[in-house]
Image (cartoon, rainbow, N blue to C red; front, top):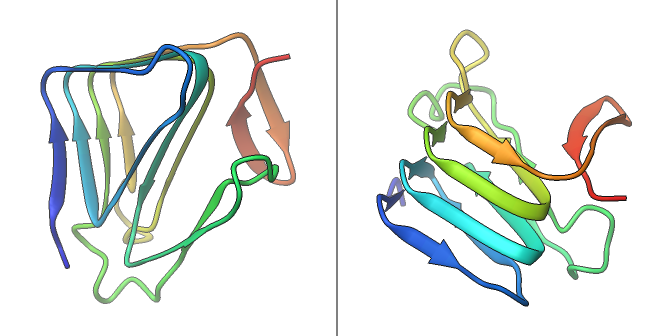
Amino acid sequence: SKALIENQGTIKADHFDVALFSFRISNEGEIKASQGSVLLGAGQKILMRPLDDRDAFFVGYSDGSESEETGIDQKGLIQSVQAKLEADGNLYALAINQTGEIRTTALVHQDGHLRIIAK
């Protein structure tokens, strides 16, 4: 499916995680997980793993021929203990367009990935 998840309101989970997975994701609202994680994954293939795994999900990258429209448009607010945004997209386009705000406690470069992680 090439469906879009679009959030223009507030998604709030005080003691839980928020996970949105789709071909395309647009957040113009607020996503808050005060004691949990916010996970956004956009792509054609998404592999879920147990949340206690270091990487709760993996987006399978394609050759780009069918994924030009795939991606995350993050214009809103993400507030959580941990946040992960990962998208498959055209190599010549932005797969993740981050113009909003992400509030968390740490930013770590790990295994070639930029991760926002609480310590």
